Length: 75
Image (cartoon, rainbow, N blue to C red):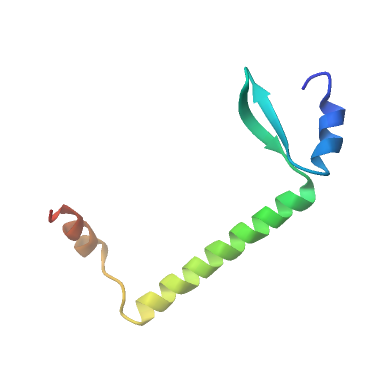
């Protein structure tokens, strides 16, 4: 990687580049466009889960933390 960083950067702009250390993958280099797409997808997923959780609360499909932990310890 030290001697081929520039080449890796150029390659990562076209497709992900896996960087290894001692033969094991340690990181992946991706283009900024791909990174931004992943971040947008992650944010959208979190937003969707929050909305679903709030809907569950509004519709009475939620329990308080004490009840949750008591149910965990029942068995």
